[in-house]
Amino acid sequence: MPTLSPSRAADFKTCPLLYRLRSIDRLPEQPTADQARGTLVHAVLERLFDLPAGQRTLTQAHDLVDPSWAALLAEQPELASLEIGDDFLTSAADLLGGYFEMEDPSRLEPAERETLIEAVLDDELLIRGYIDRLDVSPAGDLRVVDYKTGGAPREAFEARALFQLKFYALVLMRTRGVVPRVLRLVYLKDREICDYTPDAVELERFEKTIVALWRAIEQAALARDFRPKPSKLCGWCAHQALCPSFGGTPPPYPVDSAVTAAVDARTARLAAQAKAAEDAATVG
Image (cartoon, rainbow, N blue to C red; front, side):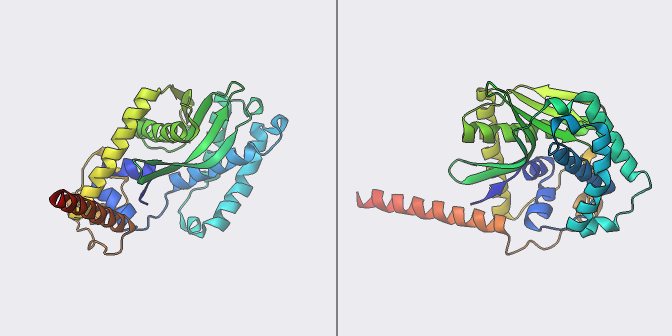
């Protein structure tokens, strides 16, 4: 069954060629220092909630930075090749300070953290993603929380971030029968919280958007045609050297792509069903 995550869906919306290079060609990307810092801060915040409520202090969070970074280096050795400055861990600690200015973790008991959620749309598309934090009130209301740590201009990624949270909200609505009361973006660098309240009608429309987006991906895969879509986000792309918009040439289209295989299989299945229906009508 084909699978779509909010990040890959956003890739296709941003630039079909970027989707292809990441999802079909599966080209490796060297993580940046900003990405590594974000991963580190997420790890610290996850471990922070392992502590008893009374111990969830900023001092404890700072104490978790070094061991969390050591654990990440052990899990992802490629991070050791990053050129990071002396202020790398200090800047991570500063982001944690921003978190404590906005929330008091001693008063929170998250129901789930770093949780994989998934649902099937249109009987054939599996959508899935990881939620940073899911809070559940005594009344059963859900709050989906996503931490944002990157240094890219927030205005360039606000729509992408809300797209991601609506993606999660749709999965929760389809699997748990509950529309989240709040979708929360926590901007650690800017010390700001953005809350958004979705409703069932909006999420049903969003589901149609996701299915339509997947159909567009299918069409591009059938045609082997994923075109670049230049924008101001190109400055953060790791694949400019392969992009025609920057004088590059994409690699040959892979013949063993899981995405393409899934699309080809579905096309063959639909063609067989159409042929069977046509034959049945002729006999009738």
